[in-house]
Length: 148
Image 1 (spheres, helix red, strand yellow):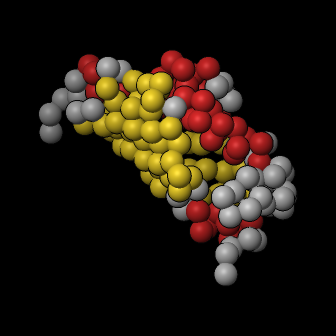
Image 2: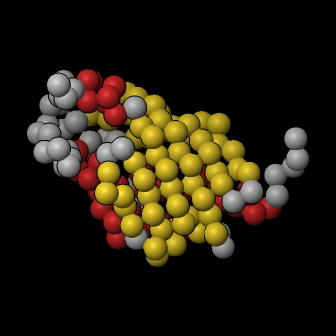
């Protein structure tokens, strides 16, 4: 296996920083530092996509509003060429309204504990595209709101 290049290592560190600063510490300024202004994020929870740094901030804010103790932990983060891959563990208490395209979910006060994977593509040291695949069905089941 080839050694990780300096750019790959920088991209990997950016991915870890985003998880810690944006998702765990709620530092929305990190988005302006780590994402391209026209970055696109894709997730099951966002079927229309997330385009631009303001939309990325609003996406994170949506989960912070719904889960006051929202926490992400990354595992097996690896970089190859311009892409970083990793697994993540999500946890939190649903004590705020979760805004959803299928209708808002009022607080259930239940805990979530689920997993997902992330893929981030970088250009010029900035995230230009992100794919997140969270086990949404497990999360909704844990909240007691699984769709029928």
